[in-house]
Length: 244
Length: 244
DNA sequence: AAAAACTTTGCGGGTTCCCGCAAAATGAAC
DNA sequence: GTTCATTTTGCGGGAACCCGCAAAGTTTTT
Image 1 (tube, chains in turn cyan, orange, yellow, purple):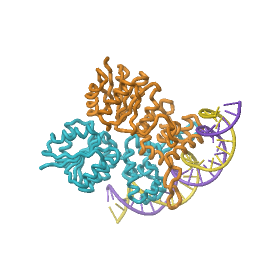
Image 2 (cartoon, helix red, strand yellow):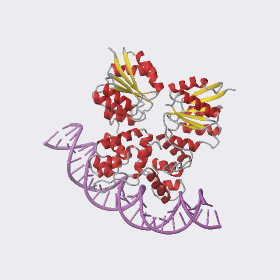
Image 3 (cartoon, protein in one colour):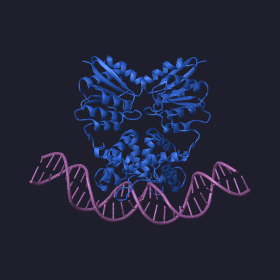
Image 4 (cartoon, each protein chain N blue to C red):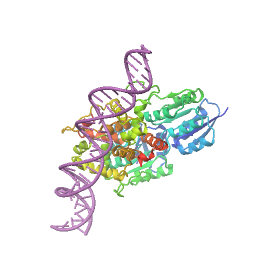
C-alpha cells in the first residue's frame, strides 16, 4: 500500500535530502509531495489526502505550527514529524496546544543522524509513536517540575509579550486585573526575577516585565512566530482592535 | 595562488553544498576548511590564516556576528560572505556595527540561486565588493528615510528590550533619564505606536514599551541573538550587575 | 465529606513609565 | 560667525506596573 507523504520545507537542500531518504526508509512504497512554504502546504492539504507529513517549523510566512493546525483540522490522527533546526520550547508548547489528544507526532532536530531520522520516521508514521527529541526542553506532562511555567502562566507570558496591558489581558481572559498580576508575579519567580538589583540612587536597574520577556526570548520559551500566532488568535477572538 | 577559505556552518547539508561549490567558482585554487560552530570557528581563526570566510548567521552558541567580530579583530580587511536563512535587520545592524570601515562583505539569503551565490562570492572575495541582498531590509547609509530608527534609537531599543529601566539606560549611556525617554518616544513614533487603543473603561489596551519590543521582534529588527550580544556588551563594560 | 493546596480577587501604596511644557546645548548648514 | 535643526534636559502630573495584606473560591488529595 502506498503512503502519501507531504514534505513542507522551504530549504531546497533539506527538501531534496528528505525526498531521497524517504523511499529508503522501511515505510514501503511512498508517494512524496513537496511544499516550499506553509501557505502552499495549507492549499495542498485542503485539496489532497496525505497519510503523513514532515514539517519544518520555522519558515517565512506561516510556521509549522500553523500548518499542523490545518493538517489536524482535516484529520486529527494524521502523524506529523516536525523536523527543525530549532529546539524551541515555544514551538513545543505551540504544537502541544494545537495537537489533538489522539494525534501522535515526532519532533526531531535536523542535527540528528540520518539513521536516527529514519528510525523516528518509522516510529511515528508506521508505529504510531510520539517521539520528542530530548533537546526540546519541554515535557508533555507538566508541571513536570514546579520551575516550569504552567499553561496559565505561559498564556499570560505570551499575552504580555505581544504588548497587552494588565487590563487588556484581564478582559481578554475574563479574569480580574489582580489575577493577571498574580500570574505575572509567578512568571517572574520562575524566571528568577524576584529580586532585581538597584542603581546607586536606589532605583531599579531592571524593569521586570520587559526583563521577563527578554529571558523568555533568550531561553526560547517564546519567539517571534509564537507572538504572530498569538496576535492572530487575538484577532480571531474579536479583540484585534486592542492592537490597532 | 591558493585561497584559504573558512566555512562556518552548523548545517551539514549546507556545509557540504558550499564545500562542493567553492572549487567550482572562479576563485582559482581554493583550500577549504570547515567549522560547525561559532566557537570552533573562533578557535580556528586565532590559530590559522584565512583569506575569506563564508559565515552562517544563526547558529547555536555564538552567532555569525560574534565570529565576524573575531575575524575582523584579526584582520580588518578579510572579506566575509554572510549566508543565512534569515534576512533580519537585527543581523544587518549587528554586522554594520562590528564591520570596520575598510572591510567589504556580502549578505545573501540561502534561498537565492547557486548562480547568484557564485557571482556574489566572486564579487566579494575577488573583486572587493560589498553586496547585500535586497531582502535585508536595512540600508547602510541612514537614515535613508526618516521612518528608520537612528543608531541612537536602535541602541536604546535594544537596551530596553533586554529589560533595562530608563534610569539604567541613562547611567549606562551617560545621558539623562529624560533623554532616554525622548529616544523611546521616537521609537514609538517610528513603530507607529503614538496612539494606542483603549478598553471600554478607558484604560489603555497596550503597554507601549512591550508592544514596541514585540513589533521590533516580529519585524525582525531585533532577535534573541542580538539581545544575547547586548547582554555580553553590558558585562564587558562592567555593568553586568544590572542583570543579576 | 473534610482538609489541604492552589488560584482568584479587592484594596491600597510605592515605583516606573510616559508625556507635555519649556529651555538649553550641540551639531550641521550656510 | 551666524542661523537653523536636532538632541538633550528638568520639572511635574497622570497612567500602568508591582506587590503586600487578607480573604474568598475552586480544585485536588486524603
